[in-house]
Amino acid sequence: MPIKAHKTAERLRKARFYAILDAAYLVPAQFAPMCRAVIEGGADIVQLRAKNADKATIRGLLESILPQFEGNEIPLIVNDHLDIALDYPRCGLHIGQEDMPVTRARAELGPERILGLSTHSVEQAAQALELAGFLSYFCTGPVFPTRTKPDYIPVGLELVGKVRAMNKDCLPLFCIGGINRQNVGSVCKAGAERIVVVSDVLHCNEPAVAVRELKAALS
Image (cartoon, rainbow, N blue to C red; front, side):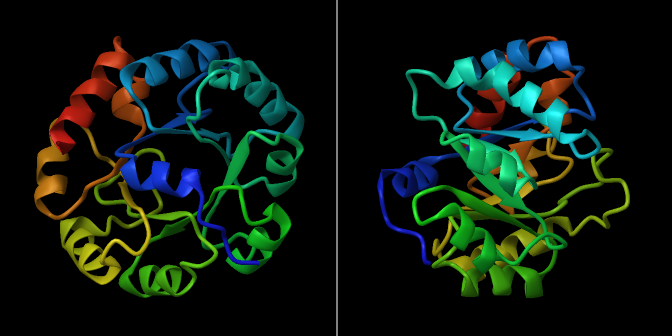
């Protein structure tokens, strides 16, 4: 069941900044105010990620931030959990290389919802592009070392350029991993047009300002 072209696809093509609300950095009470802040700062997409939490906790976190998406069309993405995403019509899904096949995820989600995939090499990026009819976007990284995924080997700036050249804007491509306000310029020079930032926003005293500054670096 390939994805259908619709206004969400156009929104993703225009997107530049992808925020992740990560339970590795936030306690439950921080999710709603942080979500409000990143939206205020101009986040184009928001993902909920809680790798080690049980499903009841994830549902609670998701419901705590859902009111922030009333009256706007900002995509809200659930990391990993297809069943949770399916229970909330507002939500899309992001999966990794070790999760279910992209084609199965798309079949379960239907043609309208957003589906994203993580890639960590030229080969995985090429596979993602072969699945462009099923994916809404893909990510490549980690560009730099990151505490979020310390076991992942950084792919470096060179891969950013290679994947960008392969992509030819076939799918919206987001670069992720260790990106912050100090190094975002080098990521842009390597060819990035869209970024995902986690710790530099979530650990900032003024997350809305951080989002604005990171987006400004992309223009």
